Image 1 (cartoon, each protein chain N blue to C red):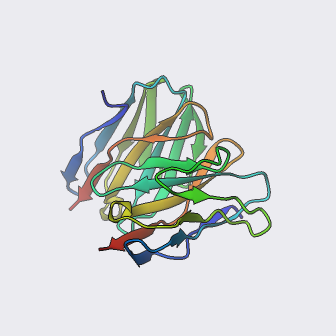
Image 2 (image 1 turned 90 degrees about the horizontal axis):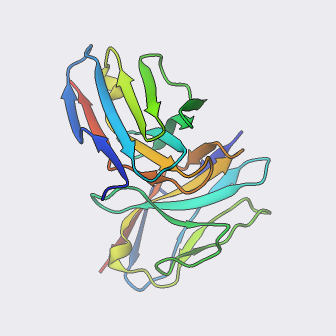
Image 3 (image 1 turned 45 degrees about the vertical axis):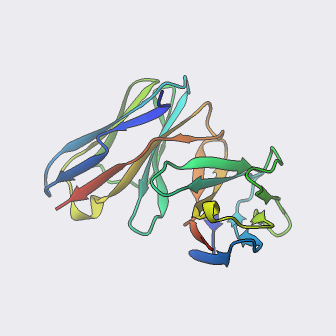
Length: 108
Length: 112
């Protein structure tokens, strides 16, 4: 079955602490993975995708096919990172499956 | 200069009514989507259109009918609204299926 799992519904960290939002996927083909972010009162927007291998707003994510994971990491969390984060899997070029989302709360 | 727009932003209606939500994108994208986000923030795809043709239809009740008059528009019509239809509905578009998606601001539907 094709599935995206984000095990943490809520993640709370202090400002300056490292943060890791977990994402595991289940897909037999070659996955295309994305992280989307939804800040308060804003629309959902792309944060990064695995094929670009870039760092956006200090966040990085590495695809680990062996562990079927695509965890999102940032070494030093900022208060403005507080948002809802969604991991998404694109299968067969047509269907996008979103994880349940993780709400990140960065405390001052 | 909004890329993906939805109207209305809020919709409050009674059970049994029929309502429509409109979506327009000015990005020249070929693919458009409708998603439903429930009260727990879970985001689930409902439909996907590519060049005005339906390519994905998840297990959505027949009361939901998408209509794409042209590539820039994908409207969602809902018949006989039920309490469980209350949610935020997001429209999105992408250059092609599987590429980055651009989302609309969402329509919060409340069925009373």
